[in-house]
Length: 228
Length: 292
Image 1 (cartoon, helix red, strand yellow):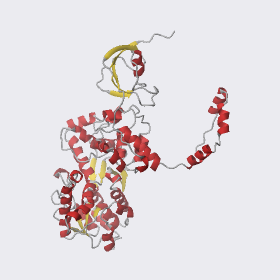
Image 2 (cartoon, each protein chain N blue to C red; image 1 turned 60 degrees about the vertical axis):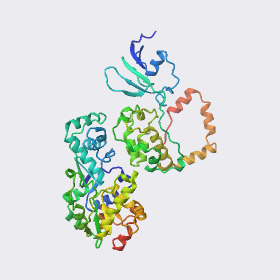
Image 3 (cartoon, rainbow over the protein chains, first blue to last red; image 1 turned 90 degrees about the vertical axis):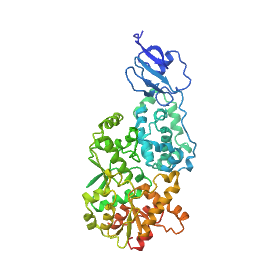
Image 4 (cartoon, chains in turn brown, purple; image 1 turned 180 degrees about the vertical axis):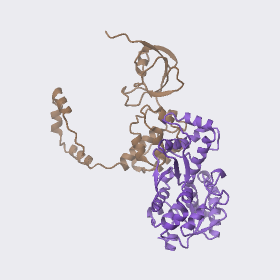
């Protein structure tokens, strides 16, 4: 039998519950009997579906985080955000230019940024959100793409922004523009796609698929990665 | 010699030729602009709202980050960036309550702003540190016969406290122009507002302003106008096609950043990429005067 876990107080949307210490916000809500249909996804911190706001006992700050990653503390007040209905313009990437003019047309609000950094404070991925917005404003799409690379589109930046900017939708546009128009083209990719079309490694794949687990594991850990 | 440099957004987009020409010209004088890291927008226009500190954050964040990077000063080329950074610096340094409130907002920055970063416009460095005599001595392609009107607009000389020269009768740009071998022509409207951001919503105001400014320069014989403000440059240059529709007697006149003329005079030459950033073709007058 495992040791008995301490129970702690958590306020879920204002109502007091006792939940086991060490629970995440999602597991504490489910322990309390809530059935979560929206605002929950991979439970591994990757999908960005479970943005949440919380405040810890004795702290004045409203914090944001992912409900699947944030561990509850005694006296914490939490609330789930089911969905962020933020502005999302439709565009055809083939018709866009990889410069600041594209953002002027699709996201004019980006120029309202006052560099307050509230978005950066809100980001559970510790992304320099304000700095990538500033990079967009001056047309440095490569910097914006690189800085925003770990964005999981949870929406907390947009929810906290006093200038009503939808940071994460700007970011994905920057990454799309970067990938399509600015990133260095890899000749290896074309070669590899051709190889796939020709089914070049199908025999090897079959071999790997039929390999016993210990053999596969041995092969995996003794592999060599060539970086040219 | 390296100069810690704050570019501002427009110098990375619509005014790339301003930055490029400045860098090339300064290299001829043995100076390099070294861009500070992680800069953000200058704040674009100093806020006159004394109690809305949010509007000061952008400027002060630049100063704070510069201070953290051990930079004692920042040089700007853009008049708008100069004016906004300079006024914001004064706003927090002149009132410690403001400084404290702004610093309270900076808790992810690892440091607070202490107020140790000085802001310079390149023109003042050219006058006071590099010296116009030095510039003159390095000129290999004097701008002989070119009659240049120096347009200041508002941001270099107003408010008085932050003016880079006499706020009512500045000559700093004329002095530079003379050191480049050109003839500086004083004109009546060199300190008038270009219409600024009215160009977005009430374009007719800016068109009228730009016409009055350009006309006053042309009446006294200017061949070209120089400025250091991307917004003035936009209004004076890109509105000329609108002016032509409204005022039948109007003849176009090229608008240069002062650094472009410096580059030509210091022997950098002209770059065709710069021409693409102009609306009124700047090359004919330079060709006519045998400068390129």
